[in-house]
Length: 137
Length: 371
Image (tube, rainbow over the protein chains, first blue to last red):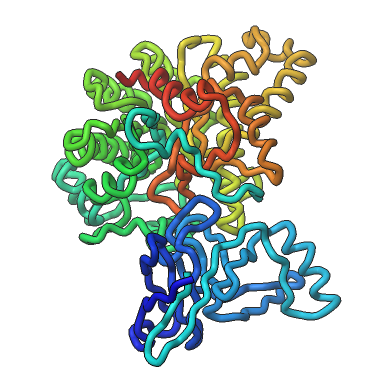
């Protein structure tokens, strides 16, 4: 596995993304609250560029009229159909049917837990080497 | 939700000889600026618009009834042209992002300029004529892959016929466009002169789901959420098909072609089953409907595919496509809207090469009489 320098730490503000091409692959790099994460740039649903999506938080509700806004800036929403992926893990959180069932469990067990959707965006390990963001592929 | 993960359709992906030319039946061209249409309007209507605006049956002038969640009211976030202007307002970028990379041989323009739904019908007719000129000037002239829609004011059949007659000789136009939520149900006699002309000239009637209409988007009034409006497009078009069948439109105009655009298609199969069953029991109420409703639908009606239904089990999509009929379905992207379908990924099912060619190209070429 080779290490590739893909950005300088100070060139990507919090909440911003950058498209980098590494070893022939398009990779979307994100700065989430000062931490860097990299996922494949292609949405697993229909292939849209994830780096052109919107960085969002999570709106959850246990019952009508009560909404929690959490995890600000930790999800990427696909620029086409709005699929949401956890930037840290690449996991989808937007299977409405299963999320609804599980969020019922959540309200009983503990708040904040979520059900994983079936889609998984590919992730790559990222590290900070001095002032540089490095991805391993 | 779809279980399959990004299975590409390799028949569409291959460059060169094996590549299937695609007909995209739903592309939304946009004005570069709010005043772009003005130069195609007579001075009388330019002044009128500047002074009084354009009113529709929607309650608030100058906005969509359901503002949508992305910039530009429901646009793909990656579709904003680098040279400025809203998505799909720049031909060069539309070519670069849509037509060229996806191998689109023909694209049917579906303007959403709302002339058809304008309450002032004279203004509406002038706006339709202007939009028709604009399509030729900005789109189909510079890129003949694009085909225009003859936009008409369906509530004033006389004006609609005049516009159809004025455009019919120009093969840059591929269909007559009418929004679905008309003042009376779509099968009623007031619209028959338009259907008669459409049949006579072998021009399909395209009914595209519309934010604007003459009525609320449900029988119980305005729905609360945009997510409901998105679904309401389906039942507005179910009402269109049902009304046209039972009012006898397809009996009277047996060669008429109706294209249901952006209303979904999976519902068509159970709708046909249900109508056939009721027709067997109650046909004496509509003796002019001589054949089972499904026969008219299978001969006179086509459906565009976007937004494609995505069953939990992907194989069920294949069943659905075949229940509706792969000879009835025509591929569409809905570019540049957020719910765009990419032809390489939207059909993750093992269609036969013949079925695939029909859906992506052949049905549309036949319906729209494309060379």
